[in-house]
Length: 69
View 1: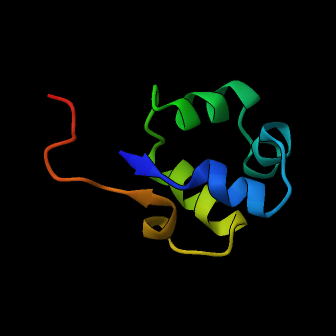
View 2: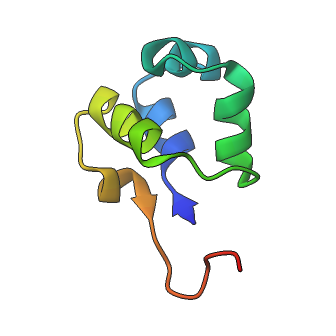
């Protein structure tokens, strides 16, 4: 799944640590999402979108055929 997490974080001047505190996860979780090693739960995706004041689909871009088997 593609995302704009790093881009949105930079636009807001936030570090990975800042974002992790805002959504209530570890910095390692943010690192894993940004590097593509982890897809967030729906609840976490919602929290992330909410702190950026946008819709989930404005942060995370689902691509057909990209889901893991």
